Image 1: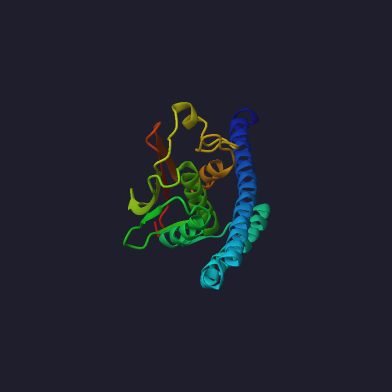
Image 2 (image 1 turned 60 degrees about the horizontal axis):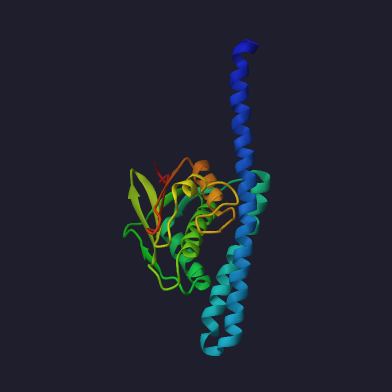
Length: 234
C-alpha cells in the first residue's frame, strides 16, 4: 500500500483511538462522580439510622452496606478504566434495575419510582459495572427532573429488536429542542439548571457496547429515555 492511499486509513485508526481514549477518560470521571453519590447515600442512611431510633436502624444500615459495597466495586472499576480493562459477560438487567432503584429511592424519597420489569430474565452482554452506571444515571436524572409528589418515574425492561431494552420515563417539565440537542454534552443534564457528566457517560457506555439510545421530550410532558443493549448469547 502506498503512502498516499494508506494515509486516510491511518488517520481513521488514529481517530478511533482518540475517541476511545476520550470515552475512557469520560467514564473514569463519571465513575468518580458516582462514587460521590454513593458516599452521600451512605452518609444519609447512617444519619437516618442515628436520628430515627433502633426500630428503623436495621433497614438504613442495610442500605448503607449495599451502597458501601457498590462504592468498593466502583473504586475497582476506576482502576480497571485507568488500565483499559473491561470485564464483559452476561448481566441480569432486571437485577441491576431492582438494586439501583432501592438506592435511588433512599436519596429521593419524595419521588415515586415504579418498576415494570419483564417477566422473563433479561440477560444483556457487557460490563456489569458500566451497565449499573447507565441505570443509575438515568434514574437519578429522572428523579431530579421530577417534582415531589408529582407523576412517578417509571423504569421498564423488555426484549426489543432482539436486544435488551431499558426505558426510563419521568413526568417532569420536559425539554425544549435546543436543550435536547445539547443533552449529551459534558456538564449538561436533563433538568433545569442542571449540570454534570451523567448523560454524557451514559451515551459513552452505550456506544462502547455498540448499543443505541433514544430520547423523547416535550415542554410540560416529561422525558423518556430508551437504551438498547446487546443480549447475551447473540
